Image (cartoon, rainbow, N blue to C red):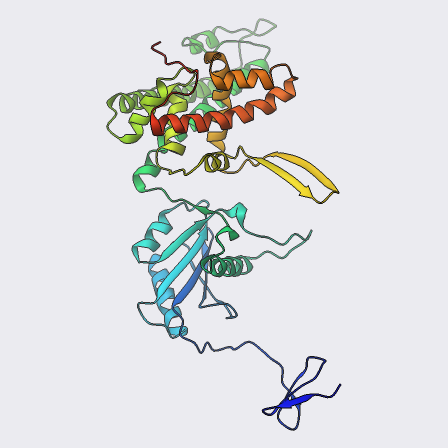
Length: 405
């Protein structure tokens, strides 16, 4: 087919663009120099233990500026942002938006960036898109470019391109330290106890870890009537000392928690007091529910509660070839999800006449053990929603009773 000439251009059906009367072929390429008037400087961080990589751009189609720097050097961060403004010929007061993945570095960098007037978001690492091929290239430079491209999409209006972590205030983050330390010490206590029992069992000895453990270790004899070897005694004593230290710290944390709850100076403490009034909910579970979940997050509906707890179903639908459920999503806060399931079992025991317990017994009670384990997850989700309504409105869940009754 012959081309149609108009204003010095010739277009033919093959899609090739000819310029001028001589019909010279011109290859369309991206501009290297941005000729518009940018309003935003985009910045992404790839955080490592020793080195950070910063990626800068001013819009789609622009080659990213990648800059390595020593980890944690805040002065260097400010210097790199200033150099990026000069490189892209931006005004000093241009808007800067940034992002980095949530992880080991926590939220201190977010607070530093916001103090500079930068619009920063902290991204859930598991929500970032990745190539689905069996093998894919992965480097820090590729990661920072990927974050940068998704940051552009996010600020263009694609809210679901990733999941943004809500950053707590310094006080709210500090309020989560007590129960997390409690969890770590509880695990450590179990570790020391099991190690002591294992060491004794290796010698054919079985002793309870009571207050007079050291004295009883001195008098222990083996199967042939000989005493424990000296090095084994010393190791058991050292392990016992570490166990006693953990026990002392747990008692200290328990006293501190009870004191804070009894005083009730903050809104979070008053919410804990309100939850503790219900049967089946103790101080530890109420503390976790409030400090990790209800105390500083704003929920608009029940779906947000189930999603953040990771207790929502995850279907797999692909036409007619595959139709199955993958269980719950297990996203969000794992320690809260674990506590919610534990309290759901406790709720069945101590609130048997509540509407939730009756619903569970009617639907899952006659079933198998597996069906009851599935049902307890559904009960945990419903219980979290009921507790949210209880804290928001003060209305006790249907059929539930208070400890004073």
